[in-house]
Image (cartoon, rainbow, N blue to C red; front, side):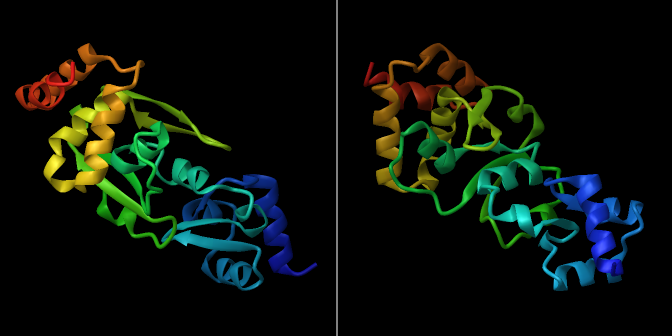
Length: 202
């Protein structure tokens, strides 16, 4: 049995289907030369700098699964969240992710999947968060009220058609919670603006 196959079997026994970091491979005696051989043999693939995964599992994992493993501290927001809630019928071209502004920007140097980070103060990542069920994983996501609050805050940065549809969809949503919306608006320092944009519909 070749060294490459032995290393592959060692990875299978140790890591199963999750993302594997370079340091973790080093810990079981698999170093840069071995990693290169495993990639050339198409046993593993490089996801981004310092991260790999098993090729045999790659086709079965969704983009959401990859996002959940790469950015467990991220929160789905903006157009990605609008699409998830049905507030937009335009399929997002990127995964919009809210993340602590103090994290390394290098984490987002990735070719696939396409990710758009929204750097936010840590304090604003601690409220209005819930979970979204995708086909093979669970992701953190801002709830509907926090989402619309952020859309109003970033109104001038959004396409007008997407923004208007989001507001109308929220107003017509029987599951909305205006009390929560206004609480979030105070924390985001846009209470007056939110009342002006939403109040006329109530």
